[in-house]
Length: 447
Image (cartoon, rainbow, N blue to C red; front, side):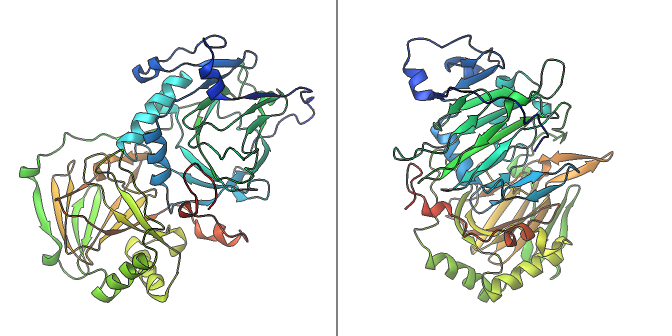
């Protein structure tokens, strides 16, 4: 949260901006933004403030894209944090929402959105920071703040409509007197700095609390320099030319399937009693946590989220994962039972620096097209891979670890991510009971 001039006078009049009403008007209210993405050519942009410039793009995301983002992060939410003057982050009573940071190009859908966001901002895609999804349950808010001098532009996209009875959830700019109503797929774009590069204190804003709904949004920040970096990916191997590795033929402690990037396969990582226990947890909650993502057939779908150390068996499995990843268990996300992706680009590789997958099916065939490797897994076998790499002291995304699962059978697997920094301690600082996505009915109203 940036330090800004809090002495600026507040607006005496309030203008509520409703994207649906803007679309219903005969023509754009003001100049349309120049859109470089061909997809955007069909979308109207409305400039609702000239100085400072704020533009609204209704239907910037499709309903399918909004659903994909919300489903992608199920089980990966953690308490939102704020930046301190020392550039460290902490949990604060001033920001009580939940957040999730994605990886660059985590799925092909997300990669397409990153390029579209860059086109809307008029900045290179290399300057886009990792996308942050946010979730506000009733009474959760983000007090007055500024996105910072190091972020010359911000885009916020609403991922759902709120209940018609909800009077909150707006994004409010108190100095400008502008209040934006959440409208599914709508993007709001603004500059955080003046043309001279100074902080524009007029852009302080508030994430107001919904009153009876859950609000989902996407925060997109642009850095003043290049931050989005990748390891170059060689052309994909054909499936018929892939080297086949069967986990059952590997030593008990596992074996390196690929050294660069590092991919390890471990036979019988879970015993069959542990597999049965995890599937039993899913059965107990059948129909409550399962999410449908039929707009993108072949995408990874979250079936059930396991609470951290929810049972003695789960705690044992988490500790074993920690040992294999050589990271403390505090860096481990919640375990998720998933139906893994069966199409290239739609298989979620995870949110952390290290990805972890354990087969819960009798047979699971995993293909890494950039590596030319197929790994055949049985129930309980595991694979672990690295999603990033440091190159000359700079973090690079490693898309060589992209995978998808073969076959026509309905698969089940256990998915987890290890993060570079601790994440579990933040949960202990929240005394409220977090809302789960399964408790939200269609339209964002609480059940």
